[in-house]
Image (tube, rainbow, N blue to C red; front, side):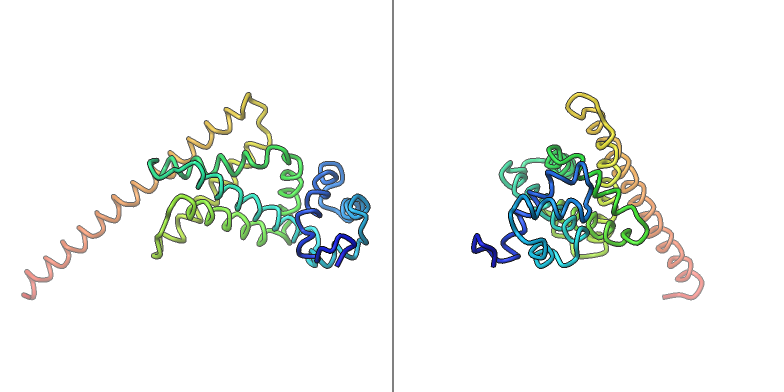
Length: 217
């Protein structure tokens, strides 16, 4: 335990809060970790106990916490009356808006996750965020759509987040317009996929019909 009586796990929120004052300048680096420890007046080893995986584990915690807050915010907004498209659009927006005070920290995190050796973690965190969004939106699918929905939304979220990081428009208006276009594109694709599926089923019925004519049934 620390002098405050907290265990390493209980220190996690304090550590991330301290880190966020240094990450914009130092990145998610050992330097930032050392400075965070000094701010908290704890031994640097305590941070190692709280986050054995180092900066990457910190980024994972930072992302998961943003997912949690997004889910709580959506629940408080009573989105049941919204269409599913509106729920998902709002989820992406709320998730990104949560990062506004830590915009540079989010940028630094994405820079680190963009490295080849960290790509798998980046994909996992985007998937987890998409999963949290769909759950918050009330999705209960368990078939193949469960995976396709999350894979597609992870791509939409990632692209929108990158756009937002470079957006200087008032109120991030350009980002939200970009998000609307991406969602519209996904819906158009899903509609086209559904039409192709129906055509495919019609084709199968046609072939089965020919078989009956030829061989009897």
